[in-house]
Image (spheres, rainbow, N blue to C red):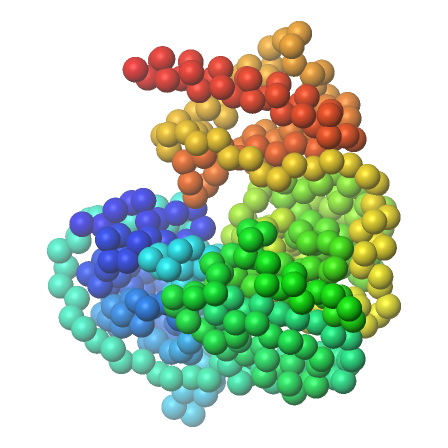
Length: 469
């Protein structure tokens, strides 16, 4: 029996083999293949790549058995980073003396999750396949879970990695022999299926940590958004080595460090925007207001929902230059294809440095404010969205104990603007939690906002609990 819980907001992801196994992966491949061909109205060619996790190849064989039964043709690109998988879907491959451009892509990866997890990130005609699409896929599978799908491991092997490496070397040839020293931490994930080959061809001055892909992740968890996973990288940022880069398990998310700063995605968006003419930059609701304001001095910023699929779709919709998530998903439509690729983003940061930008000075020049990290509040899965509605109702009532509200932005949850800052509360799309964040002109003011909102949230949780019981 297939469980709906593995069909998440942005992708399919679950524990192997408890939630994802050979049987339900075959079903996913079959019904996904039928949907891809319904949309493309022809026999579809699908690029499939996979990460280094111990169960990824088993899932690959099961997935393509389903895809083959559906009538699709599988283009196997092997062990790759997610950015290479997306890249391949934009290329043409010679198949039986015919140039074929893929109709869809599927990446088998657990991303930054613990090693027991795995999953599938899908695009169809270079559009993210997520949210309601995944719910419909689940419903299609539920109509006939007993269908027999035999093993069929046929595929066409194609070389996307060489194309990707050659592309990067050509695009960033001006970085050749760039002498500035930097360090990377691949976290034993997928970044070094290509990245050091590109560095070496460009003769860059780097040191690399944990480059060997290893699904046990023996050195640290492959999630650079967690500070403890950056300890070894930080220890090498000294003397004449000022810059560091770290990657998550499938290398679609980046952390950029200097000796002074751990640069989040919103600040990176600001830095990149300074090199673009009249840029349109897509941000998300957890951005610092400073970033939106500074981008608007020389371009246009757009606040959007968080989540990498939401950002990629909005980037395409507006034909904007760049989108970025605070967590480190960076999407370049400027000079690139508009998907999140941490390897590509590395070279764009190196360009900033080569151009003479003093990154620390640019960051220090921003107005001084206090911004909290994301604060998570555990709730029942079925309660999280109703809670947001109840919190909104309470905010509309006059409350002497609550700071004066200027307005509320409802792009994604509730971003509550006050006189000296803002507070955010939103329901996570992937976990049973509410996520809050606070920003103000001082720590004390932000703490005032936090205390007020947390009291309100606690009250609504208690009232909802009484109502449902």
